[in-house]
Image (cartoon, rainbow, N blue to C red; front, top):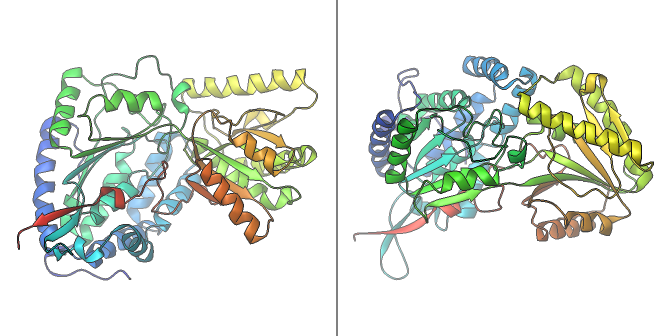
Length: 484
């Protein structure tokens, strides 16, 4: 399946539509009314090829560094999120490169029981006629330290013919709105089905700090930058916005740290909420592999998004004590080079304090124990702590990582049975034969890992991936009986 130009009712002249961010109850109600009307037209007119073609073409445009809208977003978001623009550009490349006609076609084929039923009612074996559709309105409340978290939910909702309300962090709607505006140049009805929202919550989860809530959920902590609750707004205004959502949403998906997800979920009707909370990612380096060969890949997985995403490894398990130290030295050299390419910028006081606490604790521990090692960059730009017996756990990110030696493969797997939160991704740096690797992947999935890939690929998950292992499209779809 390939992208194709659009004609007829799905087409419009570039620049005719402008996407705004809904921040009040009145704006949200108006946007939802437009979105429902657009959905009716899409249900009547759009084929799978229409939807796939528009989304793939939009993503291809955003993969082009010369796109003026992309250049503007990179500059503005780099300042807002305090990350190097070159790193942000790489993150965008990863986000949009997996949204292709082939990948979307494969997603439909794998997760829609009958792809033609997404387009029209079909006869079923029981004699009824039914259509396969998503809920009328799906709301996504997203954390925001990972740029582009809204893209995959938008893709899934539009494939399912659902209105998609995306509540990004207070900074992230910039990218989401720009992406939807590009989509509007190709398929205005689809673009109208996406409601970009950006109101601030009136309170933070009681007693939850950014450092505590940094246990990755759905892509990022609910701390500085994610702003599920970072900026404040009058409680009455927020209650009105959430009243509109609670009345209109058929499904609400919430990502973030466990405490914040629970706090937000309590505001919506029971049974409509899907919670995607804290997750941990790690890397595993096999015995005997060349540290220099894999150091660049490990560093990129660790540094992209400044280590604040649910697929950012916070622990690297290395088979063999001496091998662990060799990996640490190779990683240190690569982190020095990364600092020149993507210099780290200071974040919020709270996150920097959490980072400083990690480095201080690693320093004290390594001074007290001869079997530990601590490597630090100039001005503490990065920190690598080799710690025998440590439990894989979430750390501060921000270029700080723990390397844990394991005696062998079985020892590495035992360590992964002791994680502080459920696994998300495992990045593998191995030279194992294919059959041994396949066996390892199966065992990691049994331990709860939802993404197992080569090191260096952790920040580029396939479009079908969800951090909790559920189906990206299939979980939205249900059969709806229609008249004969």
